[in-house]
Length: 483
Image (cartoon, rainbow, N blue to C red; front, side, top):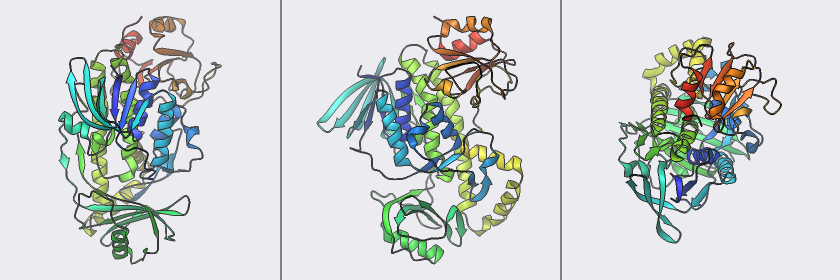
């Protein structure tokens, strides 16, 4: 085979998945139809959960200086994200183009084969793999892999070729997004409801202003090219009364409020991640972040199955865990769209929601939903508060090489934290030492747990006390049989 995994799409999701697969030892080829990165800013920043993911892999220093903020919203209603219990704030001004560049550099450093200017055409599934038909700069060719992953966006050709069901609701309106130089506008950082729609404006580096224009009644269009700046100027004028025609457009785009989620994240040897699996209103900037987290959930599992270390049943947990996240994503983005983009008939509900957000418990719930910090997988094993959640970042005392729980996950392996210097526990886990690192140290703030088993994606698979399953059972479930 040419590779264990072929990925179609070199956006943030595809690049994160390529890096995760290489970290786990899988050979990876990434096909991207664009000959080079566009440099378009697109999504801005990333959530606190994505900050945790990047910290877990040691990627944060690659981004350089990052601006953070606790300012957030739910459907245009301000929410204090500082109420969340987490090691990180959300990053606010990192353009998606920079995120793509950082993740691509990381994946290439790890040995991923990134083929730009190579377009996916079709595939054929066999008993032991897939044969992919592609078109490169030198013409058509084929490559073989054990698995194929579509991370090629909302109009995914892989999804269509594999026949995934993609139910949902079509777009009801068109909205504009623009980066413009030379404007001096009043900031509307979380957006502002105005008669006729919603407008948003915020300052980016290098004198650029980010605009979002949502005009109610604007019919959805299937464009093959970006909108003209004159269209955005006219819509902004109608909604705000301000003339922005003197601005210099840097990047223009349009989007809609379609909401769709595939019924399954895997069909045989084909899997989907990111926008290929879910499209929605970009409320709260959740799309790219959810795709990156899809990749982190999938990467270690796919590498273990493709490498013959685990049975295919492990891949079923990818659908179970991430489809549930996708369902919640559809619900909260539709709710935000109704609050933010509906007419005056929605004002009473906006007022009630604004009152409710004044309660910390409500604000914390909504902030956790949008940030992804609420995500907890059903890993079985009892009622321990850590089970299924991400391992929190805690300082470690007693290990000379690992300073905290997050640093212990840098290698993309499972980690057993022995927090009580238990030699019997370590002997039980010794048969998995080729896949699971054992860290013997002490840590505060872990609810009195004496030991915690963490999957490569950072989620807790077993903890003591309180887990009904014994340690070997959990190790076999997530890491295969002992040596």
